Length: 176
Image (tube, rainbow, N blue to C red; front, side, top):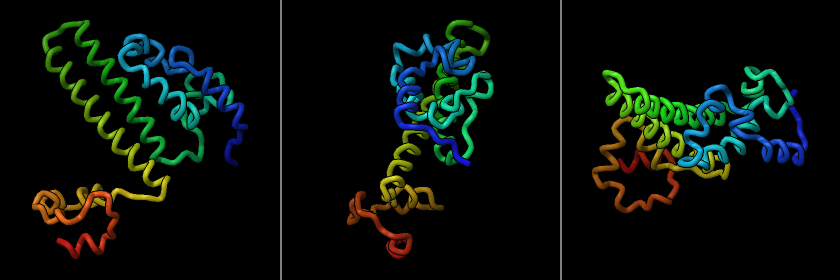
């Protein structure tokens, strides 16, 4: 059976949740480091991560309360995982700046690039999920993901198709 909670109760839990008090061990230990530069990280976490975890079920055990609740869609969980991975890579990049070692320069940039790539994935997947929730799709993104679609898009064959025009897969194949 799915967990049920009143809207007023979840709003209360979200308003009280903080990374310093309710995050996992890494979030609690490192949030102050990123807080000034990325304050919206916690805003997103409160409104989108907290509700799909067991934090809202009143579980007190720290390792259990951070787990996802049953019945949460995998795409939503993946957004949370990507969000968390951006955070960790920024923390790890900072660690290489603070503790200089033989490969710290390279490791710093590896973590920074990973954080940027993950941020791009996060934003893209969040956008696609929002479109899906609204009953729309981004046909051009799906086409781009298909084999050789990059060349089709880059060839200019799409010049007469505004990107906001939803078309079917059949139309895409026909226009190639």
